[in-house]
Amino acid sequence: MTPAISVTGLTRRYPDHVALDDMHLSIGNQTITGLLGRNGAGKTTLLRILAGQEFPSSGSVQVLGAPPAENQDVLCRLVLVREDQVFPDLQGYPDFKVSQALRAASIFYPRWDADLASSLLKDFGLRAGKAIRRLSRGQRSALGITIGLAARAEVTLFDEPYAGLDAVARQIFYDRLLAEYADFPRTVLLSTHLIDEAAGLFENVVVIDRGRVVLDTAADGLRGTVTAVSGPVLAVNSFTQGRPVWERRGLGSQASVVIVGQIPPEDRDRARSLGLDLTPLSLQQLVVRASAGPAGTGSPTMRTSA
Amino acid sequence: MNTMIKVARYHLLTPVMLLGLPWACLAAVFAWNVVRGGDHFRSGLVVLFGMFFVTGLQRVGRWLPFGLALGATRRSFYAGTALLGVSMSLVSGLVMAGLQAIERATGGWGLSITFFRVPYVLNGPWYATWLTSFVGLSALFVYGMWYGIVNRRWGTLGLIAFIAVQVLVAFAVKIAYSQADVGPLRLRPAGQYPATLSALGLTGVIAALTVVCLVGGHATIRRVTV
Image (cartoon, rainbow over all chains, first blue to last red; front, side, top):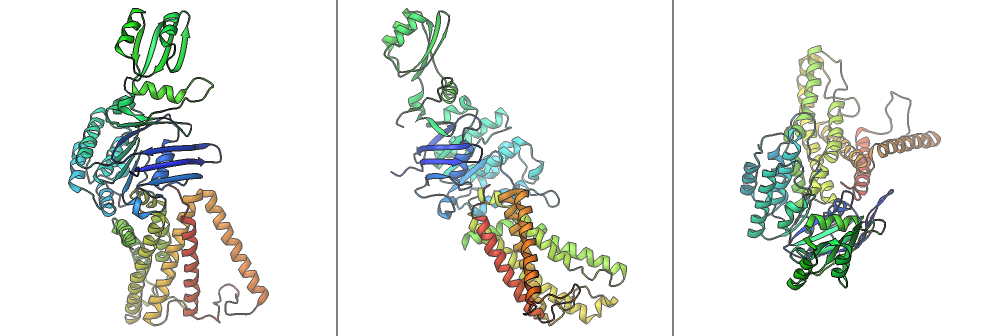
């Protein structure tokens, strides 16, 4: 089956830095994937290239089986919601209003759902008649989310969609996204810094760092597979011997080692008898480690099949 | 074609600003002229042409990012916006021809005003006025679009370079014709019209420049990023 998004050897160079560096990535149809990474990791550049708003320096990009750049057949089935979206909100009269932004989206997206858009505006407490340049940051995010969901595009890209939204509004977004996804399955790629909060949404997780994919795995497979083992150095070393180690830290007689792989019940009993703490890493902790990597050695790369 | 129409509809979401503002500005200048009671601003029509330039510029500068976010391609956005500008020019040219006819019939609105009649350029039969103003307004709209695209692609420095190149080209053309001292576009001292070029001939030259702007704008927008 053709993946919804396929990226091969993608590189984007700017005069002063490399945003994407020989990236390889494949995202299946009708999945919700978290795109995670630090600021400047290359998330926005990747999303812009997928949406045909930016051009790669080299490499190939396929969305819905074809290159997206200047491809009307692909672009009309794709929506990108950006945190920094520029609207036609000129100073002066008349202001570009929320209702006009929604009407614009309804012109371009054949599967646009006006009722859903109205319902989302109501949920977010956003007035249709309000001028966009008078919206707060959170309200602009709410508008972007409304367009992204109501477009019902086959490929929906969210780039930090809820900047400035309060916790209640973010929960509305999560709930509505899942409800929409259940009713009208689509490929969703969501970049966010609120990793643990959104972790429950993701079927797959892609972590990028310095323009490269450092983690690309199914979220279910990830949960409980990376564990921090802490305790006395000798006991930690004994327990972790022969296991794939991702990170090792020591402080005096204590050590903390991050190991990859499921730990069977008998091994957990053994760890307990050795006086060791076994702490499963949260998704956020995983991303932090995957992005930071051991000092001076670059990021580790871990791939598992989705 | 379908997406071009969608782009045009997208622009028409603000009809007052798109269609009304240029004419409102012209009406204001005309009213000022009437209040002053005569021919105090015979170049008032420049305002309408200027507004078409500004509108073309804004329609790319401010409307392109959201247009691309909604799935339009650069090509379809450009073609749809240009189509809209040309259509607006077509209708506006017709309105100008009508207003010129009224101005003639009423002896300059009863005040001997020659606001909609511009010697040599817009002073012929209604169809010539329609054609010349249609081509002129289209040219300014498309020229403004090109400025907007250059600004979006290369920023202020690019815009300055763009203007500098045009100034150099204009000087080169002037020097070339001065040297040759022949041909239908031979330049004359300031204040004189090129006697060997009729108003319709001038319209043809502007139409050719419009095509140059269209091609140039299209070539420039192809690699614009947002």
